[in-house]
Image (cartoon, rainbow, N blue to C red; front, side, top):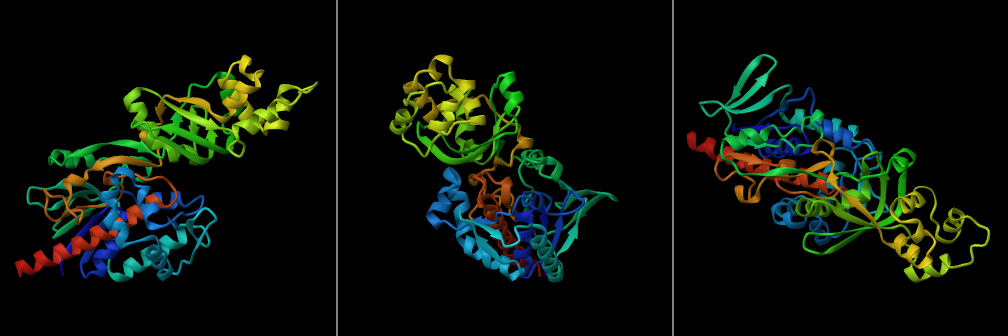
Length: 412
């Protein structure tokens, strides 16, 4: 039987192994960590978001300018197909009010256990604590293992080594140097779904770090001048901002910072009220009420939202209801830098589309396929990341098995 080597034990690598072994290949999966699926398990701590139920066109639009790279894989393994796959593992799913797809128990561990059990029963051999080092002089895949250097002859290889975020879980981007030395073009890795630094005052940082900012809208202007607006929540940190709303806007904000030095996040602190209504409400007689009480009673602005207003606007604005209403509806926060790559939920950049054929095989290295987050694509949180990893892993694993079978038959 044709040997396929999978390098990387995250969702993309595991799915590549499943696709390859199902297609009839002999499969060995190697990972540098002591166990596989570590980032998968951590990502599922708050509830494993498998995918999203929105219409396919809307779903694919989430991948932005990299849609062309990811689309064939996702069309062949759509969110409904992913749900059916989970069901085969004994994990039922449900669609939440936001359209996100979760396991009924919300947990990652039961799904991973069932998945690994099925892979082992199918014959997949797991080799942990094996760090990929490239290829030896005979073209064999080379690893550093606890027993020393170890080489493997394979008809096909699937690289599913992740991006550069969360390096303590194995995605450290060390593969970049190996492929660069082989003259494989790599788009530099950048943080995606990340937080940003904001130059808070000491008072604001001390008082509000860790506080959630709920039910707001955020707007960022892209490098093309398009205004992108999203609804959601975020969290104040000691360094700046992070959380769901920020992640949805992070790609646009990051690219603006790259080109212009800083980016502006415009916050609507009262998205359920029009500017006219808010102005009318704030213009009511204040009487003996303090400004803080007046803001809370007539604008619903209190706590961290009031703190944000006072952090950004002048005292003069706070006493001018026309200007105050405008500030509440469009409060500018200056984002000075994305947080470091190792703090990001995911990464952008990686192996470019031009380097790969439609099967995700490296054009310069026949028989070597790439999958998952090491490809040059990005997507927001909400199930899009995991679906993309699983779908590209499945595509690459099938293609690797077909390639290996064809070349094994030729040799015979």
